Length: 581
Image 1 (cartoon, rainbow, N blue to C red):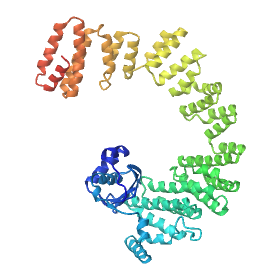
Image 2: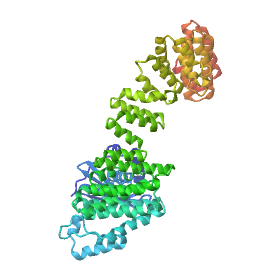
Image 3: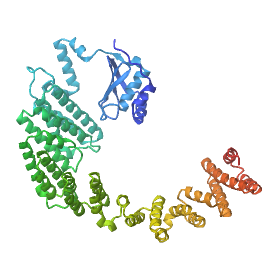
Image 4: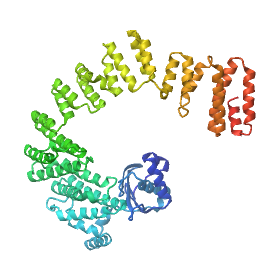
């Protein structure tokens, strides 16, 4: 008798994405789960979903701990269908039929029964017949046979036929491709490299040949190709002694890289280039070089964006080849020829050819201030701070990015006049109160603060009213602060205006108390409890001031008018009472 896991809805909830759990609850309550079974260490069932055939769902456990989940939906596990199965177990465990493992069941059948079972399965799912022509992963050396290319092509072709119509067909295609990948993985786990490679290569080549005609808006089909390509690349070191097989794998992986670049960089060949560099022979790398150069040749004079991108991608692969071969001169020449300036900069820096790196950056790596900043920081990281500063300085008047100016100012501390100049340039790009304080300190040391302050503040328009008001508060110029606060746009947060009001109320009591009262009345007229709460905050400020100045009667008269004018607003009365107003 299989052990029965003790699970509750509350201890399942933290195991899943919240959205999946809620949808799984809906599936459970709608009765989507059926044909449920309990085997040793496993719950299984079918789940009706968006596809025309049910999803097959399994949960594996040890004791009361879930160790893995699996689903035939595109997510593959940890999904709403798994949640629905588990909730069915939690609330209706009696519906689960106790079954022994499939292998044990089959062992109890004789040859004729097994043939009948297989025939019945094929009659229900005709495509299963292809499995009869596939060698079994893990078979003994005596029973092992080579996989028929035609058989695996049929499997892939059947999967691709599903992906031409809609997202539902694509989901079925993804599931079928995933099963083919799993077949390749089983061959690989059994160290049957020849058949594993045949599965991965066939899937990759067949799908990529027709990919542009497939319906794959989410890129899930391409993801399965990527899985196959990654597994194929992991097989490279396993077949180093089988020369023809190894070369065939190299060609297929190059086909993946080429397709990835042709489609604009989908991530399909991520990490594959590293495997090619690490596990190819000099002869194979020479073949790769010829292939890349053949693809670069027609791009050399092209200037459109896609061609320039492809040229950079192919050039980067050539650089990797030179790196793998230890060909420094070839690397430098390739990077120069194909305009891979950043890679060339990094290599020159690694070789400590700093003057050449600096010249290269000045000539080719100033497409943006941020890119130039990255080059300066790389020089700094390698200990070439003075060289980095010298690289940037000739372009000081052209810099518009405050991050680069800030970096330069940080390294100009020994030149106070230059530091102040850089801070002023930062101010033009992004003025802040903190920067104002820094400039003030620097200018005071140089005895130029009054003129500098004027240079900072006069150009600021009313769009900078919040900044100017805060600066005037900092300088305790109360009249200017209050006057500027009146120019703050009505859609801006009230925090700055309130801050100014609190600071200048002793200097302009009538204006500030009028402001508080107007704000409170406006919020009350807008209605709503949240507005009433905000209104009481303004009234509280008003009360505090009147009581501090001994104007108790004025406060009492003011709040009496408020209560009378809005006496029908019960929610307002409640908030006023809570605030003791």
